Length: 169
Image (cartoon, rainbow, N blue to C red; front, side, top):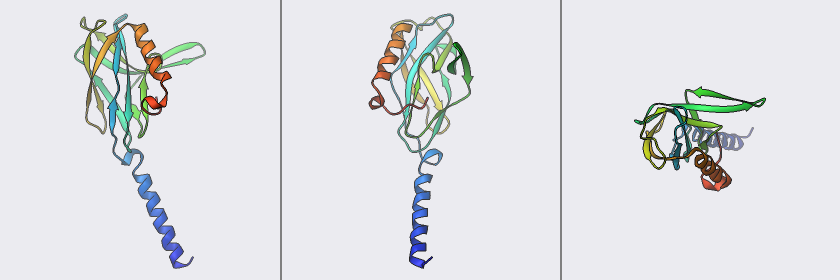
């Protein structure tokens, strides 16, 4: 290969490596959290819906969620197969670069375990989300009836990708 073509090829490979290196886990995440709502507790539990959008060029992971108004907050995935729903507790949830992770009833969601008596319709509380690479984010959560929670999530889903990114969860 003539020397100028070799130099051009090496320059192109170097540029490609730099481009790839700036994406995914090597870049920096830039997270935002959308409006958060929780259902009025039923049978000692409450679901939380929220969107987490990563505007950055680096991946992140949600590794914990905490609030003072419940015994615990668990990360859950509900899947339906053969007409049966199963709920799995997750240790962490990927928040890929350039994508939006949606927490919704009947899918990926946050579950308040044994919320206290302050979690009532019309009330609010704070939820802290902890990530592997980003600073913790604290979001106010509005408590609504379960049906309102589902309708609100459906309305945001109907708004499509222009409402804040692409789906990852």
